[in-house]
Length: 404
Image (cartoon, helix red, strand yellow):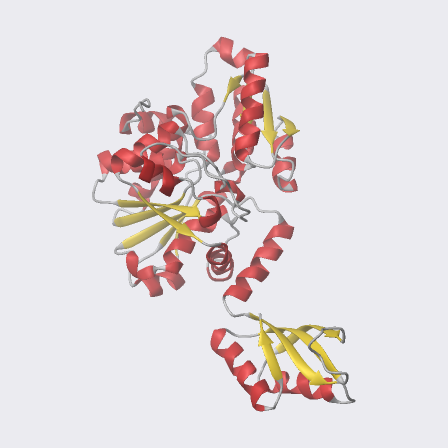
């Protein structure tokens, strides 16, 4: 496999192109995570980038290099949402007509934002890989130029400008932890570090349900991966790009995976402790550090790659994260169906400081006796120890308790 090389000089040229286009996003210390790691943790806030993610850096860089004839032909792209907005914004700034293919279940805010920048949005398929097929077909049919979300040297160079900023903003950085989907952002950052700061470690983080890189790196070439459902739609890519894969393989970039539970806990931690809104994919780096803080030494910089999240998904993910963090306790309690039994159950939970937010009765479960009822409770708690305390108290009072 041979892919066009991307160099530090290419990234610096991209940075000049992006002046006045991409925002130089701030960094912010994250003390809550630093306490676990034992050294400083500084967040790179690409969730505050124009169009809500780092993607405008690569998309604009790629389109700025198009010839006049190519610009006149228009562009076509495929994306779950962030690249779509980056292409739409970049095309608007450059005066290029854009068609963007997005999955049929793409979040409504991402659809609205992409259309708001003037792109013609077309919905097809259920994954980035399926939308890419549609975009390639459109390019072949119409002559539009395909602006790939990650598999082009110009895109990689544009994304690498994130690393240039980090090296200036956090001069003592030891490790940069980056969400990893197709690989453009990690490849760009790794390219910069290899030449400008080879002592800095870069770690790519994939959602476990959409992790194509581990098997591909083991095989020595991109291997398609059948995706399982993941909340981290921004990094749900079934096949690594040839250009970024070659860079990650050549530079020996470490790749880690995180579970859905770990992603939701990270998103909750960033919202609650750092006061920042990020999308699940954008929280993947924080999730990796939270999951195994002892594996990260020196000053750690997780990149919050995007903040484009549907409010409905945000609500669900926060609730999921609260369950994962022991902030919600789901119980099924078997009690005698006689007057006062429910009141005793509720009072027992209250006495232990639990706040019941949902109650449901069932008389129809096969294991129940004639005079029994199963009560499902959802309880707000203060953490895992508090959850255990509530369960222990209920059992000490004679209740038969099942936890979920």
